[in-house]
Image: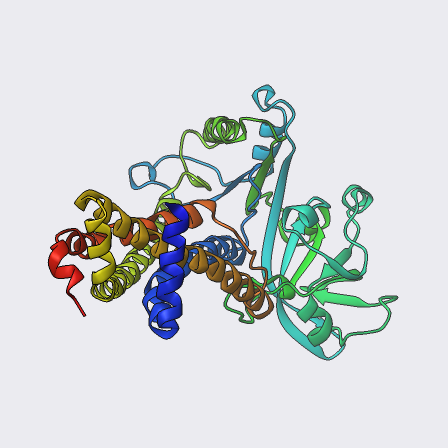
Length: 412
């Protein structure tokens, strides 16, 4: 039975290759768009998170300052500060999870006559792993730099070229900001960001310095801009992250006299809005793919109707030899589904290929854009293609089954 189906599909292809390929085009485009766009959407989601400079690792709970709820604006509180780090670091419920902080300030920096706006980041050696930073020359911060409050700095690619003038050696190179001199010990590799731009929020225009030196130079009040709690990987990491968020929220709330003037990323309104937007985009992409499959289904119905007409005598002979209406019906239905499934396979392969090329191009143009293979989209695409073939093959198969054997044998 299966070999007969393959033989009939091959005969249809040989009879008119152009018509056959055009018929499959709708199915191929529909499945390819589903596979390609679902992969690109996942890569785009990661790129957007990276563009917003978030620590995107699954084992990081990130806290940042937030607005005080309207009902609590008259209550006494305190800002997010070093005390919160110390309290969390000594919280036994976190089981010794490392607690890291980060401070930032936007200022003008100069080297010789060159000047430019930069963003100083007071951090620790862990920032390199946290933000996936790479060095083009020199070294990164060390624990000794933190302990000694060393006036050393690791600069972004734009700071190195525009302000420092791209010196071949970093020996004796200094950067001055707000009267403070910083010895440049390292240069970050260019870190492209989604959408480009020249703002100081880009890593290319940032200067990373030891948080202890930063505090004494620019932030003596102890306020911090970001606080991170890093978890060890476990089998139930998602549940662990959720539990740790709860511990962090309650601990910081106590320090802030019960006023929630901070935001834990992953449980706020902004994250819900982001998920909603991504959900709407997914729905629109699915709709586009479905419409393409419908067009492909109409094309399949057309070629199957033509096939029924061209094979009228063959149907008459099979009926005369004892084939039932049900046999004829299921044969043409299976042939229609096979043609559509073939289009689905070609579409899935094409979608993966285009996704790979597009991801490469976007990573070159916009920065890191990972290539993703979304398994459910491949399975759903091929299954939807086969189902489309069955649905749109019903009418041609029904017409073939209703042909009168005597009339079919006389058909020229």
